[in-house]
Length: 206
Image 1 (cartoon, one colour):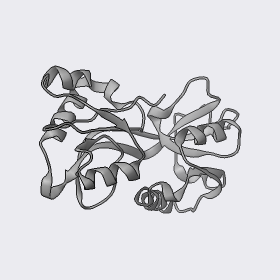
Image 2 (cartoon, rainbow, N blue to C red):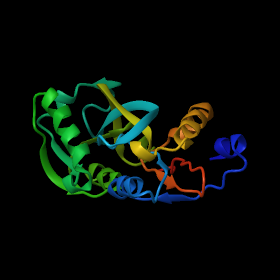
Image 3 (cartoon, helix red, strand yellow):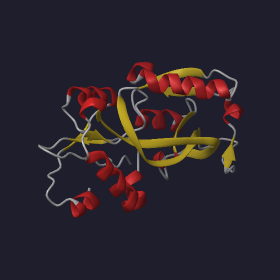
Image 4 (spheres, one colour):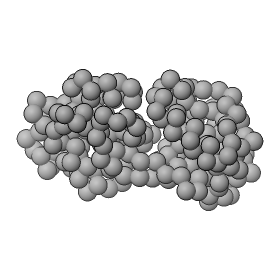
């Protein structure tokens, strides 16, 4: 946000943190102009990639993989898994299904929760394992983060549906890349709308 304000001092930003389904609905309805999120994986909204990062396996602190820098997803085929609810955003879960299929297994899901924070708590309690972007790592949480080989997460700036797309997302993308790592911490997003030119910035999810 600081970088965007420095480059576009005449733009007044209004930000909101909302779930992905409401982000997409707001963009389609014209309530929001731009957002920052994982790719929504829908056809009617243009997106611009802002940054990518590694995906990690989240494992209990006592795991035998704690000394590893990297592992293959297939190595976790026999582990119990904790994942978000499928209704949270079906396009994402179809993508997750494809990721597991490429690793030649279907996860044995023992619990589902609504947020990454809930998943972290379940992993710390030894209920199961999960996978999240590496930026979710939290020192002292009792959770071990080990990078998954070949697995990356992308964050993008989705704009309004194509027939009424505005110019703001390119400004957001250039500012996020210019501002570097501080623009890319966490998976959450805020979405903004202003009278003539809109922008969005990341919510730091720590």
